[in-house]
Image (cartoon, rainbow, N blue to C red; front, side):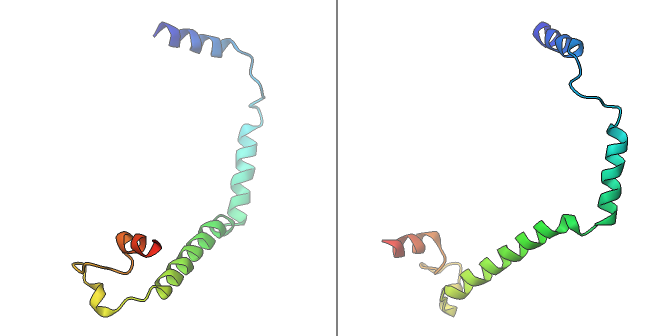
Length: 89
């Protein structure tokens, strides 16, 4: 605890590297900007979700699975890691 106390004391005595006087107005400007453009924060997640959906659809379209292989108790499922590893040999 003494070491932690010394570190905290040094931090308290250190000069402040930037002024915090304009922090609150800066935060309110950013909040107002976000209110004006509510959809701007949704672009990246929406594009990521769409990309994941397309990749999933493409991977299932390329895998040829017969109805008999859909059973979870089947010894060789087309998308099982063991089957995919065996095909890679």
